[in-house]
Image 1: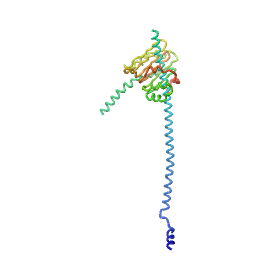
Image 2: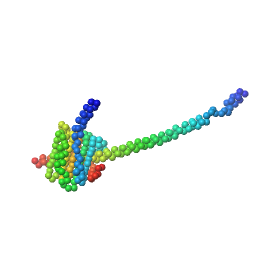
Image 3: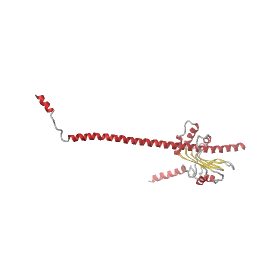
Amino acid sequence: MSLENDLRNALRRESPPAGFASRVLQRIEHERAPKRNRWWRAVAASVTLTAILGGWAAHTIHERREGERAREQVLLALKIAGEKVRYAQQEVRTIGTNE
Amino acid sequence: MRKVFIALTLLCLLAVPASAQSIKLDFPALADRADEIVDVTLDANMIRLAAKFLSGNDADEREIRAMLGGLKGIYVRSYSFAKEGEYDRNMIDRLKSQLGANWKPLVTVRSKHKENVNIMADMRGDKIDGLVIISAEPREFTVVNIVGDIDIDRLSKLEGEFGIPRITKKDGDHD
């Protein structure tokens, strides 16, 4: 009958140790908390990334506008300067051919 | 401390000739009377930025980009008037008096009824390190100051409109 005794001992009803239930609840709470943190971190990362990309896009647009404006100003300035130099050269040539 | 003082003094001494290359181009009295104003102010940074936006496919723009490489500043003031006699012709001499000993006259065109043009170059040996063009017409006064290494022949060969709109400013418009 030793097997019967062994089984009875093994399957004997035992009360959980003191504080078992609170430890289980604490563990569950602890596992839940990081999940919530991860979700907030993802949101924060998305917001930061959007802000960085938005800032970069705005900077690129601003730089393009400034660049196009500078290009037009350079072309205009060199056009005016070129016209004046050409006029002076033509006048010098005309005087040269008349003499 | 003494080394820092010497370094600062040297820096100031070097900075004076560098800044002396550009001239003072503010004519508030003319701006008040002008019908149309062209105002271009480009420092070295803006010139570098502009060069990035010039097309490599267009021959004119390629030429301009090559020319911009040696430039440190481009300044243009052009005033158009509704009638003659709106500006003092002595302004030409006042502008010339701002130029240092390195500046030599290259071309001077004098005409009673047409355009008077003075072209002066900042000569550093055989090299031109700056250009001032003063053009005085009965109804228009224009000053161009180009600071840096500039090839005049290249400049005169730049033809065409480059598809640029005329930038005009009316009184009080500071954009």
